[in-house]
Length: 375
Image (cartoon, rainbow, N blue to C red):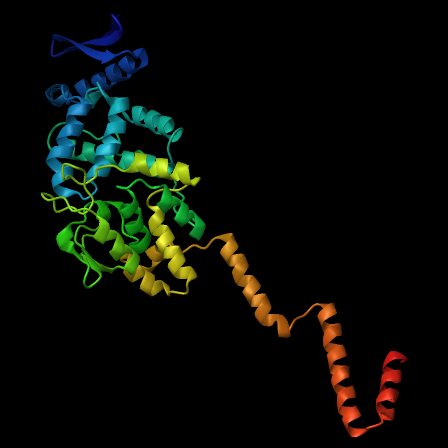
């Protein structure tokens, strides 16, 4: 048994039941040795025949099968899976499934962390893990190399939301096709997928209600809409052959608006802001306006009260304004020394006025005044 190089690729050479086997691994010599050691163990454990049966399945082929056979028919987040697998294929493409080991996945995690957030990496790793689970279930592989990969710690409590002036700037910076989508998100807190999949039969402009059936939780809900959104939707041009509210010239719903949204943010001078933060903006402004969290929970369609708390953080400026309001309310109880002196002067002045009323000529008042200034 051993490894050898042919052209730009390394191969492993070994014997099984007296028959010589050669297997192409790739450009990495270290990877070739790892796979060779794995073959030795599999041969010793009588598992090699299983490997031989599945070894010709490439990663990109399995990714396509997973999307078409499972993700699209069964998951509302299939678009997210497609994006994740596109990034994963950029790293694992060209490799056979049996060649991928846990170390490769760890390397992918390190590389992706250099350009995206831990939350994004976790979504991609979760997709990879589930794809291997389905591959094992379908008899494509004998083990899941992503099974023991730990997810990264995420910081989910974002406090970013748009102030009033930022909202105006963003709406004005949006192109015609994006503006009604952003206005819908700002005025309803609907998720991007819910907005892009919205159909005209689900919109009742007379009753000012939007019905959402394709929700994250799987439960339908209705959303009350305000006059601004009603006027916006009235101006949206309906496609004669498409039921979708927001669609392209072919009548198909917009698949990805990220580029146009990023351009609008740049023109508006807005940084560190995602489309999903429009939902956060909706919730935060409701809370700051005094709307109770239970009502906010119903408007957002959250299943638990705890979920609503994630979307109700207030900015330091708002908290500062709140304590200043409290300070003004407490002004009659706690005052600086200068205000205390003014109150004392008013008190003495009031007493003098009362004495002057009792003594027309004011001798008593004069006496009190002298004692006040000359204690």
